[in-house]
Each structure stands twice: as structure tokens, then as C-alpha cells.
Image (cartoon, rainbow, N blue to C red):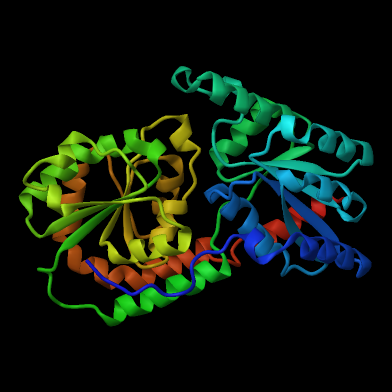
Length: 383
């Protein structure tokens, strides 16, 4: 277990540093310079999807020769509408037809390329499980689908999603995996350096497990709760940190371990990196269904960038990571207790692996890792 002071500034959303007038001026001035403009249309709420699928994309696209990128929220779509003559490509992220009906038809009229970025399996009513088919969720997903159907193609995060989207919509789909921003990479490097500078040869410090998700992933936490509880019961100097999940399974509330199970609310991305840096092992349990197969590697590389290894469910994405020789562990046959015990016995090796984890994550998911793919995609889209 490690403890650090926070490094870097708190995560600031794109809209906080880019007032509307500045965005409009940038679009117009870029066009006057002969550059191409890509505009991302996102919901008003800046989720993790917006950060990785819009903000980080914009961060890299603006470094490409001849390209500028800007983000507009749906409630500012009238302003975006007035800029259409300066825009070359529109990309929608988790936005709805009923909020953008007039806008999408104006785009079609002007024959502007429009693409929909999809990062989870709920891209159509047919892809929703009966349990998830509540009226509100179903209605929202139908609005997503209606807008997506009018787009020229798609962008997505995993090979599994790419195949399913192409089969469902029969349109061109680009695979652009998630990656970190320059700021995230810089912060991660500082945590890693501090972590490596404070290595101890002792192995009797507290060993800290981490489970970081959102409140909707309670069922994933249930998969490992009994095994994690058993591990904590066996080893007194162990802890579990849970971030983002409000409800905790009963097995983790036992009197003998409850003081070693720490629960924290959902955090912004930069703060979360500190939490990843302070744990010894990152747990990524997933129910093995299509929704989990569609999930990307974010939790793996966010941990790896600060030198923390992950123990993961055997989805295609995570199995591919390990098959490439990257440091990590797949939990087979849901034997979480056995897997955690094995890693605990090898815990000295975790410290030696930290610099290698960072290098693997930087090579595969660093800020520049998708630059060429983005450039090729954008140039193809505008023909």
C-alpha cells in the first residue's frame, strides 16, 4: 500500500477552459487558414465517455497538420448550427435524435459527413437485455438509435463492438481504442516516479486491493465479494478500497473486516489516478456477457500507467492484452481467491514490475498511440 499527496491540478472539463465565443472563433479562424474542422457533439453531462471519446480525441486531433477539433454540447447546438459552413466532419457521442432533429437534417442537407461514436453495447433496442428494458432506458436508447441510423458511419472502442455495429447498421465503422491525454500521462508519470522512489524491500506493509467502478456495476462487485472477504479474513494486514459503488455486498460488511473495507464516492479522473497509484492490485471482475465483452481497457491502462497491476475477468479485450505479453493476470474459472492469493505471495515482484507496466501502457494507450489512426480515419471521412 502507498500514500501520496495529490499531483497535478484537478481535472477540468473542456467547456470550463473553452468558452463558446472562443470555440466559434477557433472554428472560423482555422477554416480561414485552410484547415479542416471536426466538431464533436456531446451531452451536457461530461461523463467518462465524453472525456475519452471527445476530449482526448480533440486533444490529439489539434496536433495533426491541417486539422482542428472542437466540442459543443447539445444545448449549444444552435450555435453549432450557425457554424456549419466552417465544419467538415460532425461526430456525435451519446446524443439523442429528439434533441437534434433539426440539426441532423440540416447536416444531411449540406452533405456533411456525420459519424456516431459508440462505446458500449446498448446501441440498439435489440441489444438490450430484458432486465434493462425499463421504459426510460428503452426510450432513450431508441432515440440514440434513431440518430445513429441517420449517420454515415460509426467509431467505436473494441473489435467486439465494431463487429456488432457493422452487423447491425451495415455501415463503415472505425476502431479507435481509448487512450490517455497528455495531462493524464504527465500526472501518471509523476505518481510512478514517486512510487518507485519509495520502494521498500519489506513485504509486511498493508497490501491493498482496489475495485473502482460506478454504481451501476454492483453486480460485477458481487462476483468477487465473497472471495475478497475470505482473503481479508485470512490476512490481517490487507485492505480493500471501493470507489464509485454506493451499495456494498453483505459479505464485505462482516465485523472482522469491515474496518478494512474503505468506500469512497465517484471521483474525477485525475483524482482517481492517485487512488490507482496507492493500491497494490487492481481488480476488474465482469459478468461474462455481451455488455462486458464490449467494455474497453480503460481500467487496465489507468492502473498500469501508475505502476499498478490488474487481475481481470477473461473478456476478449483483457485476454488480448495478456496474450501480447503485457503484465497482468487473467482470473480463470472465477477463482478470484486463488488468483489473489497467488499474486499476494508474489507481491515483491509487483514492485519490480512497476516501470514495465508504465511502459506497456504508454506504448499501447499513451497520448500519441492513436494519432496515426485518427489522421487516417479523418482523411478518409472527408474523401
